[in-house]
Image 1 (cartoon, rainbow, N blue to C red):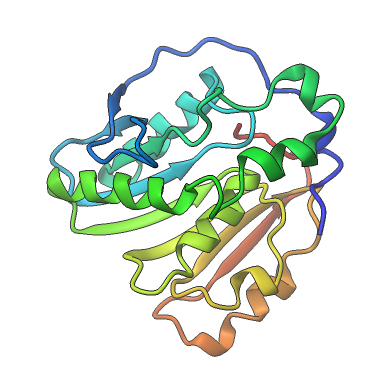
Image 2 (image 1 turned 180 degrees about the vertical axis):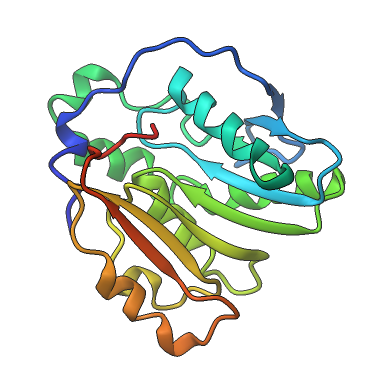
Length: 219
């Protein structure tokens, strides 16, 4: 299992965006430390979304994507927690040793990713959300799948654009339908979707390939 070549060779886009949300602290400390989250969307919505950015952390394009997701289909309350204390992978490390950085900083269990997601869900509940979905960009797609595979998780749907590391094995225990949007750089995700048909979810899992897009187009 490896990261797509495109992910390891495409730097983040730099552009300007006026954020529509705000950065606030999570109520629950993670491993004894405070973490923040980017909250955006309709504050009266009962539909919550957990958003997981890619290994570059948050950039203007990331916030733009999250703001637009939060405004779609009548509006959501979206929470994008701080997963990387250092803000994400640096350009220097990105160009030399991506996988070592991921193994040290982006492991679901070792780096408390699951705990951070649960803390963000708890805060959205306090704000009135009663239903939840989760998505992630690139590496975040795998994290979303892991969160939606935990026993007792609240998620009604999971997935994300240009996912990395997502395999049949990665979704074998998932409890919700998924949607994965692939760029031209990802492997065929149809086997992943086909493996979920036997779960008989209320709606079908789905994948679509965008052959005119590079990996990372939403990040």
